[in-house]
Length: 228
Image: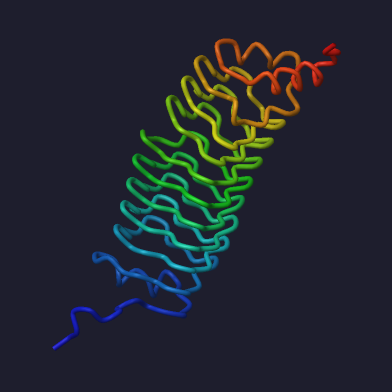
């Protein structure tokens, strides 16, 4: 009789689409596996767990990825475009320059990840949670963070045009040199955000937001005003 408590994970293997396709239809756990440059587009991988997997340049676009877990994975330049990542969890993973364009991310959680340069344009869904994550140079135009509590999120040089940060609270975050044309910060608490690199035209975006006296002095200095 099979041991109900045995570890049934598939470990330390290199997979291609031909290997993965027959495993769909039931949840699987892959540990330490290589999926680099694999074409997994359109596959049903609902509930799968990927732990310490290499996914550089993998194509998972259009896949069913509801409830998936991505733990300590490395997937530079991977494509998740138009995939369904509802209830997915990304933890301590590096998906720099990956594409998440038009993904469904309702109730997804992304924690302690590196998404430097990632493309999250037109992501869909509510209650997407980012925590302790690098979004440097990431593309997030039009994304809503309304009423979100943002903890240690680095938005430096990110594309945040037309983002909604109304009533959001920032803790140890950075907005340094971000593109923020048309963004809204009404009621936001920005006392825990680095606002360095602010341009004169950006100052109006923070009307109705709360900043500290120290931040106000630094902003005036960056705008070329002398504070006596």
